[in-house]
Length: 227
Image (cartoon, rainbow, N blue to C red; front, side, top):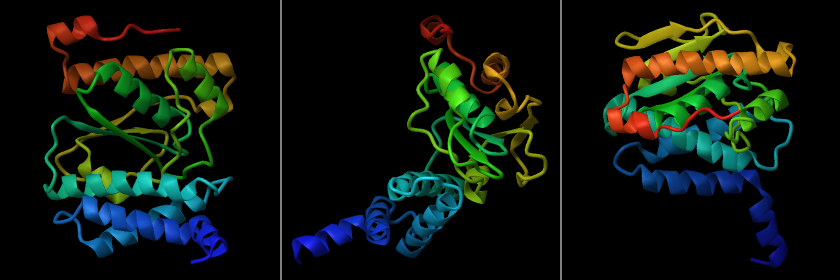
């Protein structure tokens, strides 16, 4: 292969996606068949491409999204055990409320739960105001991106928290469903977004107290709120 052909292969998103599928198929060998893995990788890429403003990083984001979905699929089938409760946060665009909730839950839970987030109509990126108010508390959302709501992540969840997305989330028996009524950060000034952030923190603290209470030692070592 010439240097030019090699560069084209590296730049071709479909070549990258095929390599991603091969890598994930190896990782999930014996758990999810290779055809399902490849379908999920390309499906994830297509779903993210519908709203992305910049496509250069899409193959790598598709890999991350597909990997998350494959783990959820395996968990829902019982092929991968859950060591902690799974919580799914869903809003409309997955660019504000659900991203803040997921990030705050990771911060406060300190490994006591596993968190995912999604949007019923995902946006093109995280709201700058949301990134700013989370950074005020030492939480970096720079690596996060809006993800569409998929059936596999709902099936894997133990608790599903919705925020303004109506009936978009499918309902399955045996799961805990909550709806948090919160203002949309896209319609607020910075102080308004801070209020939503603080409301979410209070909701998250209550949820964690119910589904994953901290031990005395863990509670003492939990990080204090910053801001």
